[in-house]
Length: 133
Image (cartoon, rainbow, N blue to C red; front, side, top):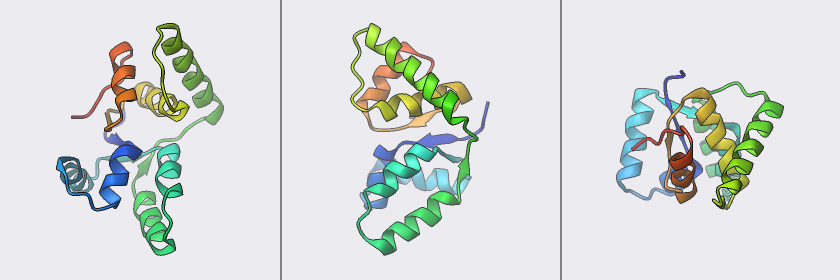
């Protein structure tokens, strides 16, 4: 088991937009505890929405300072596809396939996920995905 917490894009976007809510306060605590693990897909999703070059550079620098898990990309694609198919057989619709990639990496590495995306709650109901609250 890897120590730490994966923070989903749904949390990072509000944090970087300076939306002060209970989740942003918790992110500050996690930053202080050095408990953040970043997945490459979350790095991409977070950075791709930033329009301002200066903000992009600062956000990139900050996110690259956290821990990353090593990923075999072919294996990750296969387990994410398997998760998507498993959920589809249960008639659970996941809106963004990247959510299956994020969830499957968290499941496989036994890392809790901090999010505000209802798709992850659906995934957690039918898998061993741990949700950080």
